[in-house]
Image 1: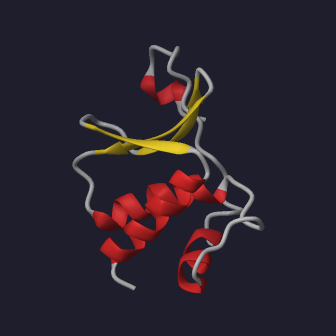
Image 2: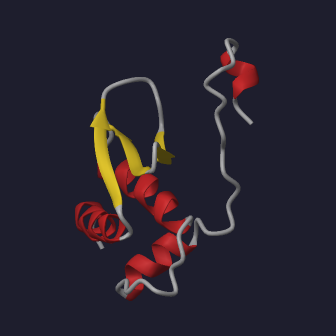
Length: 101
């Protein structure tokens, strides 16, 4: 499946889970979060389709996939991220090296 089509399927699935996707400029990778009870996926505006698919796939993998219909190829893509550890960033740290956990 081409990356653009994968992004389309992943976007629809993440929105069905109640997330809003925001495209922002900056020096960051992107990911999902809950901010004041809003579910968000923050996406780097400069990313191409492959990088966007990965951010969306990782965000979707953090949800219960048993109740969500995904076409088999999309489900296989998302499931590769299920057991991968999360990278947490503490934005209160002043030293970027010590902030990544």
